[in-house]
Image (cartoon, rainbow, N blue to C red; front, side, top):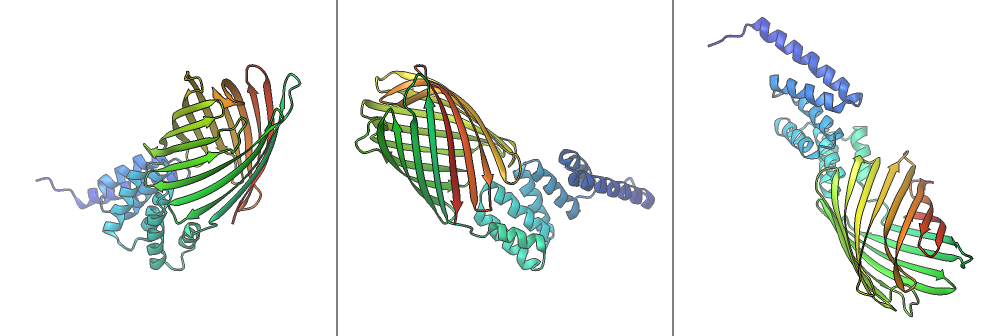
Length: 354
């Protein structure tokens, strides 16, 4: 049997403590991957060190490795049930996933253990039920090439959150194209799931000239990894000139969590003449600051409009500007090549949560 001298044990303990301090410094400086590597070495020497395991969970969460972070926090609580920071860690993991019920339960336990802790109080406030209603209004105007008359559109939508899982929305659009006018209405129901969401939409335009007389939409999103989600949208519409169906599988990538997103869709349409058409769309969003989000996208895809389906190549740019915590200004522009003519659109809108 090998006996380790007390001096050697003390030296190993001192080395792991130095490594632990370096790992914490790495994590706080934003070097999460370096922190994880060091903390794993520390825990190999000191598996019962709950502080090191907590910091491992925090570093893993910074890397968006949520399953591993959750396991680290849960291990801390199994060893030290009153460790408040581990409860906060579990709450933030659940919050990232959209599981607000679990996040509130863990934050409530943290608040019970540390009722005067300011970080815990801020977390509890952030998870409280906020505004349940949302009102969106928008207007746009388009200039067409070749001396064609302008297009115009006005939209108003109101939605209501029904608990943590359900949301219902009603939208009304008034549009004018080539001196024809249509009014389109839509009812949409969204359901949040663990690891995703689904929706159902039903809409139509009575006495339609160019909008669909009736349209049914279904779709959803499923999280594949912490940064990758699969999306699917499908619709069936009846136009005055015939039926159009579409299916749009896609992916949503969190390139930088909560900062930079990229979405890609493949668009397959069976048009009013029963021809099969294909296209794609790319959309990015960058949260440039706490108040400003920027959008940029490109699409080359079939679009049903004015009674028939055409291939449209389009760029879109825009910005979402938070004027207050509850009021958002949206501005945007679209540049389209529709084959027979080109279209340039400018839009402005407001979103209010209350």
